[in-house]
Structures are given as C-alpha cells and as structure tokens.
Length: 299
Image (cartoon, rainbow, N blue to C red; front, side):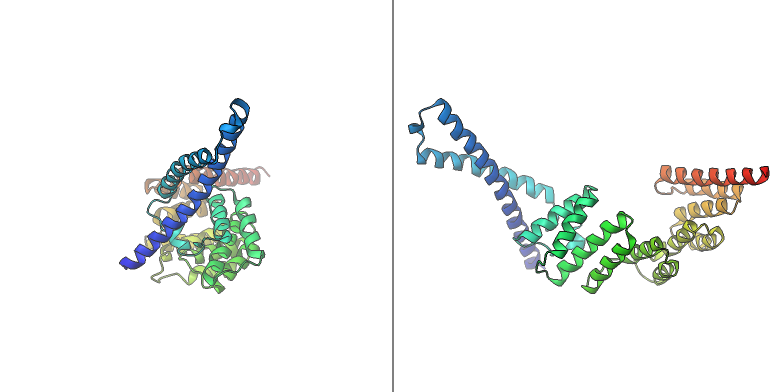
C-alpha cells in the first residue's frame, strides 16, 4: 500500500513538473525575446554575450519553473493525477504523451461547462486512431456519453455508454444515466427496467430507484402511476423529501390541487434539495393545471 501510494505521488509530481516546465519555457522564451529586442534597440549589441544570455535564461527559467510547479501541485491538492474526477478516471490518461494532455484539456472544458468544446476534444481523440488501453477507452467513451446526455442527444449518449461498459468501465451512477437516456429517447420500458434492477439491493443508489421511476412517469404526464412509486418511496423513507415533492406534482397533475399543496409544504419542511428550483417547477405545473381547469369550466 505504501509503495503504491509513493509511486502514484511520484508520478503525479513528474506530471506536474512536465506541465510546469512547458509553461516556464514559454514564459522564458517570451521574456528572452523582449530582452534581446530591448538590448538591440537601446544598447550596443556587442555587449550581448552568450554567457549573459545563458545566465539570464537560467535566472528566468528556474524561478518560473518553481512558481508554476507550486501552482500546479496546489491545483491538484491531494488528488493523485487529475484535477477533477480523480476517483473515476484513476490512472487512465496519466502518461507523458499527447493523448493525456488532450484528455486533461477536455476534462477542464467539461467541468467549466463548455460541453461543446469538451465533446469536440473527446470525439477527436476517439476517432483519431490513438492507441488506448481498455481503461482509457472506457473513460473516454464515458465522458463523450456525459457530454451527449447533457446536450440532450440521448441515442448518442447510450451508444457511448455501451462502448464504455464494453471496455470494462463502471461507476455506481451508470444505471441512473442509462435510465435517464432511455427515458429521453422515449423507451420507457428500458428506462424503468434499469431502475428496477436497483430496487431492494445493496447498490449505492438503490434508495433513489422508486423516486426516479416516479419522475419518469411524471414526464409522461401519468400522475397516477407516478404517485404509486412516490408513495412507495415515502413509506420506505427513500429519497424522502424528493419523493414528497414528486407526490406534490403527481397530485397536481391529477388535479388534486389541495393535496398537491399539502405535499408541497411537506417537501419544503423536509428540506427538499434545490428548494427554489423545485418551487418554480411545482408552481409552473400548478398554474398550468389551474388554467386548464378554468378553461374546461368556462366551456
């Protein structure tokens, strides 16, 4: 264990040193060019010797290297190799090569919410013919899938997730991602079946399965079926506050306005996540249903 940790830390240090050296070299070159141009303009060019240039290069490069190295190490903190998602990516893309550099660039764009740029980088890598280990192919396909999913291109996302899993990639969140993508394509049966596999298991996200299934039926405007799943989740105290919120929406869709308000208040009292976002969503549904009722009564 100790030797493995030492090896990982050593490799991270070398990777940080490599990245820092490239930045320090670029800064040194820029400053050297400016210095040389200044000397030619304002001093006798014969005063510029090889030794003076070499001394200046060292004086600029070494402090720059030290500064960039400290910043790089601070940026990565206790993470072994990657600034983000180190537990997911692990030792994939940690080589001293172009594919690792490109992947890191794509990863930074992904976490900066520049999804289009991230997707372009990951896609170019996947179609460039680069030699990759199975672990790297799995990680790369997964992040392509996440980009497609965020952009709402669910069929593409499913293909990438399948490719990732075929490469041996697996994380606990994958069933949730697969279910949401199937639901996005309109394949309700596959979406629900992915989640049913988690019910009453020791899977990390088994407690979310019933709530997630309920939300699938909410999006289908099937309040009755959704409510059945939310009530099961409430009875079992699974995703309790979120299930109360789901039940509030389900009752409202079914035109049980007062019951919807009751569950809405319970959801707030139980500290539902993203309270403002949930309130906006619930009130939007409520207004639509009330207007629909009003329109029906008017005719």
